[in-house]
Length: 419
Ligand SMILES: Cc1cc2nc3c(=O)[nH]c(=O)nc-3n(C[C@H](O)[C@H](O)[C@H](O)COP(=O)(O)OP(=O)(O)OC[C@H]3O[C@@H](n4cnc5c(N)ncnc54)[C@H](O)[C@@H]3O)c2cc1C
Image (tube, rainbow, N blue to C red; front, side):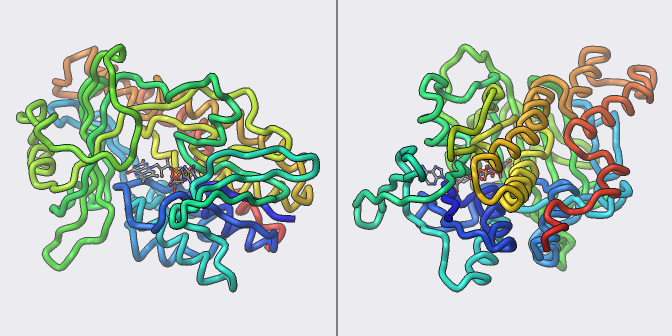
């Protein structure tokens, strides 16, 4: 009775940790030969933090990240449109964390292998395809060290292999590449003095030019922290762009000229970009929501199931929630197909709504409204947009993403009835 997990990213590792809590056997196959701290910053929403706390890693999160206190939208002139408290400051029982993605992945990996007698994570094993057998599922992998092909049998296969999932490709051969909306994201981390509350996440600009930034570490003795930033420009989506690859590095000369006049008295995007040594390029891509994730003994999880634009701080959080929900249903239904169907029934409609909301009415949508109405310049924001419009938009997105404060505070962590 083994669950085979393809991919040791955030989703795959959380699923492993959750199955370990429930004494359900599993094995994870990861194509990278080492787990290195790759990527830049990500956010963990209170619903996901509650699950990570239940996995016993909340103190570690405090060590590697910071608790986000504020979220804010600003026009391209650096003027405040909307700010709201986040995490504990907003009244959630759990904080929101801003953290380096690679450090989070390493934390989950280290925690898992420390807790288990036999290491369940097989690194350097690139999954190439699966086979549905009469009473099991078979995973085929290439061992990158030896070049040999290996076949591994299990009861259930969970694809946690990210936006370019090989399992999804086999299930949906006609689907093709992820869908690009024309925007390119350049991402980096540099050391600088944090702005506003010292733990604020800000989005500045509008649909065709944007800068997002937040600190992902505590301040050092000089009052500086690791500041994560994302600079974004929109191009014609008919243009050719390279495949989505989280590891692609580029030079800042590709985009910095567009940000030459972006320096405000409270944040200096131009300086942040200029002082960063490693810059990663990623196209703004997602995929259309699927009708089904589950086929016989196989299901999809995290970005393999529902890749979305990284605008709502939801990618990692949703992979964590998926993992906990799937573990719950595997426990209830004893690792069989019914568990996968119940998981799909619960999570597919929710995540489809988030993917679609992130396309045009994510938390950032108000930026373009303000740009359209006044080109980003105003004396009083309420002459441009009413308080009611601002509040309604913010609440709507929170409720789509499962972040309603009262509802969340009144519910237990997903596996609380078993552990
Ligand atoms: C290197 C990297 C850097 C990232 N950086 C950022 C970032 O800076 N900001 C952000 O918002 N999001 C980033 N992401 C995406 C983010 O981690 C996910 O959106 C979110 O955490 C959901 O996680 P996931 O587990 O579904 O997918 P991922 O975290 O993408 O994990 C997928 C895992 O599957 C493995 N894998 C892929 N194909 C195979 C295969 N054929 N066989 C075996 N293993 C395979 C990958 O190596 C990876 O470890 C990054 C992802 C990766 C892989």
